[in-house]
Each structure stands twice: as C-alpha cells, then as structure tokens.
Amino acid sequence: MAIGCRQNQDSLTPSISPYNSVKARLRNAEIAKHILLNNIPIEVLVEIFLSLYDKVYDNREVHPPHAGTLPRISLHRDTFLDPMALAQVCGQWRIVAFYTPLLWSSIDIQVCYDKRQLAPLLGHCLSLSGNSPLDVRFVECIATDPEVSRQNPRTAEIMSLSVTQAYRWKTNDFTFLLQIPAIISGLSPGSSPLLETASIISRDADTDMASLEKVRRTVHSSPSLRNGRWVMEYLERNLDEIPWGQLTTIEVTASLESLLRILPLCQNLVELRYTDNFALRLQSSNECQSKGIIMLPSVQSLTLRINQPTNTVLDHLTLPALLSFDVHVCKGDTERVHASALKDLLTRSGCHLQAFTYDSPAAEAEEVVTEILSFPELSSLVALDIRHRTTDKLMHLLKRSSPERSILPRLETLVLGHCSTREGALSAMALSRQSILEDIATLSVLEVGRWDHHPLDLECFQILLDEGMDVRV
Image (cartoon, rainbow, N blue to C red; front, side):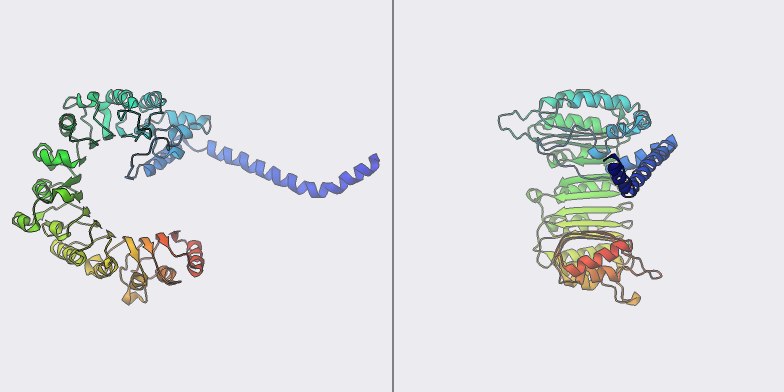
C-alpha cells in the first residue's frame, strides 16, 4: 500500500512542480517590487506624491453632497489619494507622508450631521501641514431629515479650528447652508494676508447680508487677492467695494449693466466667467450701447452662461489675448446671433482660439457650430468640446479627406456630449485624424458621453486604442 501511494505521489510531482515554479516566480517578483519601491529616493517619492495630489485639485467643481452619501471619513477631494492612505502603505511611505507638509495643506471639508470625527481629523491635518499656506474648501451638506435644524452643529467646531489658521489661508471656498458663523464674520481686515482666492457663499444671502459684507471686507483687504467669486445679491449692492484692479480671475452673476461697469476696472484680468441672471436683465442691449468697446488686453479665457443673445456681451469687448471661449446658451431662440457675434469679436480682437466649448438647447445648434468651426480664426484650435447633440453632419465636417482639405488642422482633443450618428460615421472621422502628416496634428483624445453603440465603431475604437489614441466612450 505504501509503495502504491509513493508511486502515485511520484506520478503527481511533474504536474505539481510547474505550479510551485509559478508561485516562486510570483514571490520573487513581489520581493523585487518591494525592493524597487524601498530604493526610490525620498526626494523622488515626495515629487510622486505631490504630482498625484496636484491632479486631484485641478480646478474641478465640487457640488454639495447629499447627507449620508459620502465615502469614508476624509479631508481630501479624492479619497483614494488621501495622504492618510499613502501613509498606510508601509513604514517608509508613512514617514515621508507625515513629513511632507504640502500633502496636508489642501483640505476639503464636507460636513454632514453624522461626521463627528471631522474636527479631530482636521486638527491632525493642520498640525501636519506645518507652516504651509492652506487651501481650505468647506461645504455644508444638505440634511435628509426635515426635523433636523438647518444649522449644522459640526460647522461651528470646524470653523473654530479653521479660523485659528486664517493667517495661512491661500484659498478659502466656503459654502454655508443658512448663515455665516459668527466666528468667520468676526475676522478683522488684514487677518489673511496670503489669501489669493476667495469664495464665500451663504445660501440665504438676503437675510445674512450683514455677515457677508463683514467677511468680504476682510477678504478684500488681502494684498494677495487675485481670484474671486461673488453671489449676485452681494455683488449688485457692493460693486465699489471690490478691488477689481488687482484681480486676475473673476466669476460673477450679475446684470449686464453691472458687468459693463466692472470690466473697465479689470485691466489685469486673465479669466472671466460670467453668468447673466434673467431676473437682473433690467436693461435691454440698446440701453447699454453707450458703454462702447471695452479693451481687456490680458484676458485669455472667457466663459459665458447666458440667457440672452451673446452679442449683448461680446459686442462690448475686444480681447486680443483670447485663447479659450466656453459658451452655454440657456435659450435657443437667437441661435444665429451667436455665430456672427463671435466672428465679429475674433476679427476685432485679432485673436486665434485654441480651445472652444459650445452648448445650446436649440434645434439648429449643430448648424451654428459647423458655421463657427469654419472661421479662419479657429484654424489653430487644439481642443473642441461640443455638449449638445451632434449628427453625421458634424462628423462629415471634421473628417479629414486630405491635408489640403482639413478643417481644424491643429485639433488634438475632441469631446462630444451626445453623438447620434449612423454606423461607422464617428469612427471614420476619428480614423481620418489618426494619420501623421507634416504640419497636421493627430487627434490624441476622443471622449464621447452618449452615443449609439454600433459594432463597427466599437471595433474601430479598439484599433485606435491599440495605436495610442486615448478613446473614452
């Protein structure tokens, strides 16, 4: 019996040994990986950590979350790249993370009613951030329970900790549900000398205007202030209280008349984001004609969210440095005006766009876009983002038939919000822009939100992926 068992064991050995070999190789590879990680110079590891961190805070919008839907406790906008997570990988990473103050200097606080651990965690982050300037974002969450008071009890303790470091604030982006805490409105002018970017939002601004005005006086006293966003209730009453001349980026919701009063004072402006409010359209475009043309020599980026024809704004501007134009048309009854107004602006300014974003609810929006893309001033376009529905018509326009007949020869990034085309039209356009030609750019990024999942297009997209194009569909 023993002999038979031994023979059976010997017969199994050849089939078992390959698995043992694989396990050994995997074990050796794991050891080698740890050796490589542990041999990364500390300076390089710090740069890797900081580069990951910078990508997360790349000007992405953060909207108030609904209470109870947040992930695990974190003071980082992306919980997967939380510095605390990096510190838990191994002993070396923990030491590097804890002794790199910049990793802890951007704090994203989203206060819910059940987040009691936030205050101790905030205190720990502030301690680890050393003397680094702070980027602090605070959002007071919406309560799901109608019986719960709208005044979040966590807000006061979080703000009490934050205010102790006001002298280090580089960015403050605060959104309060009901009212601004007294400890914030009690800050004295000059208490935040490093402050460059400020946004203070009280959702009940009409009843909290006195507190908002106190906070704003403190914000505007910073000699470093360059970027700001203002709620329209404050802006319309306090236009003369804002240091427009030192600002490089502004985001405003205001009437057209107020905008035209502001802009001549903004000679250092680089980025303008404007939303017109239908309720504030007290003046017609004819009543504002006397304002004349406003020259803004440094503006490179213009974003409009607008209910009225774009010419009511564009006809007043000359922007010789303009590189990026983003327009969201909220009403589609004056669609043709948008194309002619943009053409006039580009001609008058002598500029050539590199990035263009367009969105409109109008049925003829695609026709307007095809007209705009044919402008010579858009021949240098590198990035194109079309949010509304597009069809074969736009694909045919963008399809490259020959170097001599190539519209948008510099295009590298194309984003389509809703693409409804026949089979093969979308992928044929992308394939036509994959060829490498002299003085003709290759499309490197294609992103499509909604589209008809045709089998032929899917097959072509796989080919484009294999050839190096970044296809996101």
